[in-house]
Image: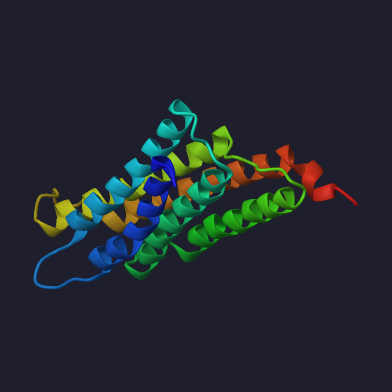
Length: 188
């Protein structure tokens, strides 16, 4: 297994630790720990793709696993945010539905021997999702440590961010459907 693929697997392995840090409120607040874990996992997404392209190590395994690792990380955060009152369930369901649709298209294409890599809209969507989640985690950490000015409504800011991400996710999903309609309509 090459280094880019190891980074992708590492990202997936970091998810349970991120979720535990975010949801467990023990003797000390954990949003900064969750922020560091999420940011580090997000950086592996940037690094694995750059390394794979730079070193000619783009693999079918990486094209398949990288988007799944992204989905696992982002959707885990968003589901936790629902539990914490930081995201509306409908916004998160829109994101999850898009992921199922795109994964379904990829599976159909794979059955025909075609691997569909992430397009620019998919990459923009992923960066936006990760940026919003990092921003919310930062606000949570600042608030938990008394460093956030009074009157900052973190749940409101988070929910607005989640709805913006949901809208971008719909656009991204629509481009995958339009770009790959041939796979969907293909007959044997």
